[in-house]
Image (tube, rainbow, N blue to C red):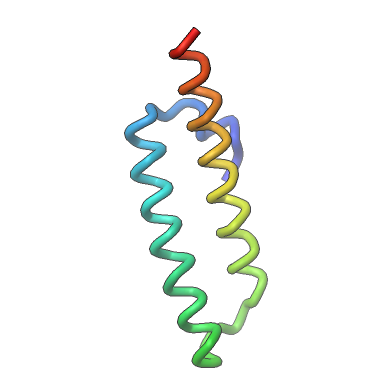
Length: 66
């Protein structure tokens, strides 16, 4: 997921995307603990996507407050 594509979304859409990613991360961690996860790098990628979404949310909120 690219930050440029995230910047085109609204804050509400970004918050919804954040919730989806958190849920996906929970499921991935659960599968990792059970030994069912084949690609361990997926957990790392989802964490990075979460941080990207939070960064764009912060940028947009700061822009609105100015």
